[in-house]
Length: 459
Ligand code: URP
Ligand code: ZN
Ligand code: ZN
Image 1: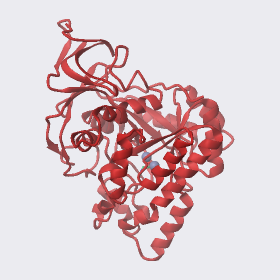
Image 2: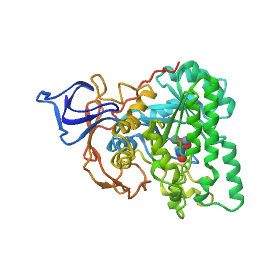
Image 3: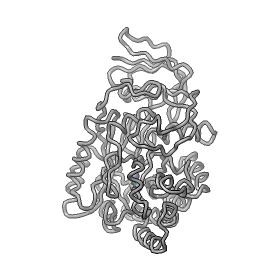
Image 4: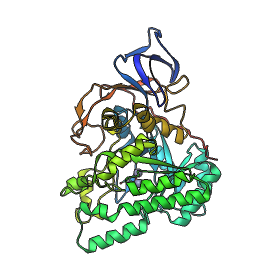
């Protein structure tokens, strides 16, 4: 069925204007004023609303065996939550661990999403060990349409790689023209500090941040940048949380190292005091890198506004209360992760654009366009133009609401942003021309999402 979005204000990363959008099949075919549609078209009245390109979350975990348990969502639940929140495409971290076979892992991750996700998706392929088979397997995965790798400098003996493996991964990435994303914390220091704190009887969630201080993240970020500089590979720091790490990445950028920066919505809005709450309340806010001292938030907002931070993702990774309680005797056993896939766009809009911190075009760029460009999805995704997929978010800036686990769609018994006010939400969300969400409700087709082919471009 054709789709006509009438009378909205279209906002992309570089333009803002009043026009109608017409889509035939899955693609935008016309943009203009006074467009007519055949009688069988679905017509959406967007008067008084903003029309954004579908938002892209470039860092989520859905299927994730981690810390002796599994993240809670399925692709069905996560994609519905994503769409309700305006995210029409996500890139999941495919994370087989060091003991697993990478290629088998890749096929397993693919099988979990296929026929289950209601929005479009892709994967960053994690390299968690570099052995004889790795090069051949990665070449095959890249040929299959995955043009980004992921490495972890943290999580020693599980996901973590050593410096030699990082070097090998980046050297291959450079040859293949793929971008490498990296979790940057010094694994050795984290392990040592964890043992020290536990030996001192410091077992509660409030000790998680001191076990992974800002300097440990700064070291990881600086080391990753140095390896990029010496291999010529292009990199992307995930979930950057603090000023010292930002300073290392910025110093590398300014000497010409091709390094891009992601931060995630929890680091803009939640600080370490959330993890210092007693008992399970603190555990709910354990993630890595940890929630930081509040002074970092102003620095992150400023860097985002100026475009030094390229993207805002979620690092969506839900564990429920009973899973968090696995760490009640030792903070080192609390599964790391905070959900956010449904809340990211509304929070960034409310606390960024509505509060005057973030320009509306930069908002679209950081939450959609920049990820599409960095990860080989542009202009199919990340903009509104003839020929682009008709992934559209008709956004109601007049909506007022409060975030709560009682209303969210994520498969989790708490909401990391419980009680946060939002000032705007998607009224209608379309994926490839089909309406999937209306007024906060999923009304679409489950399992309709497609794996997006992404080709290498960093040669
Ligand atoms: O705490 C986090 N971030 N959990 C998910 C795994 C990761 O490091 O991204
Ligand atoms: Zn991480
Ligand atoms: Zn992550």
